[in-house]
Amino acid sequence: MTQQVMLGVAIAIPKPHATVLTNWRKQVGDPAAGLVWPHVTLLPPTPVPADSMEYVEKHLAEAAAAQEPFVMHLAGTGTFRPTSPVVFIQIATGVSQCELLEEAIRRGPLDRDLEFPYHPHVTVAQHIAEAGLDDAYDGLAGFVARFSVESFVLFSRDADGRWAWRTEFPLGGTNGQAKG
Image 1 (tube, helix red, strand yellow):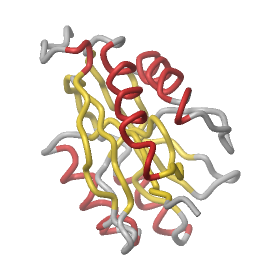
Image 2 (cartoon, rainbow, N blue to C red):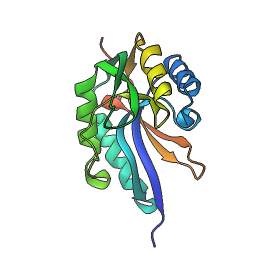
Image 3 (cartoon, rainbow, N blue to C red):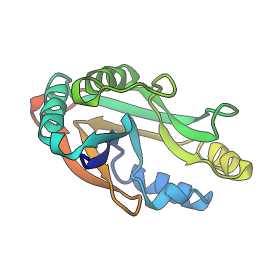
């Protein structure tokens, strides 16, 4: 039997914004706060044969090279309730770029079906008591962040459930500045 590795691909939210979001996640009692870096998912947790990693990384490098850096603007909260017990930070600018990246990434060795239609966002609370979800929704309603997205990250899940930063892929194939 081929050994599998659990992978995810995401845009990592930079500090200090990541620190604020992680602290809120801890404050509302979300057990995932210490396991995952604040991010915008481009590929949800996906099992991949360990021996295909070279092909996966080549595919991701090509997807990154085809997308230019861009500015992301996060503003306010949203929720998937009642369908799913999730509160998130909304993306005000950068949605279309995330959608293009997600479409390019979820092909070839990472082709998979999704449980729900792709909706880029930053999760700040999930699968916790309603009161915690409400606190996150209300407490972060005024949250605003704006930053350049110049790369995305391949993460792998460790045996303890933590997501580990594995490889960073620069957008546009360069380290150029995003235009605001």
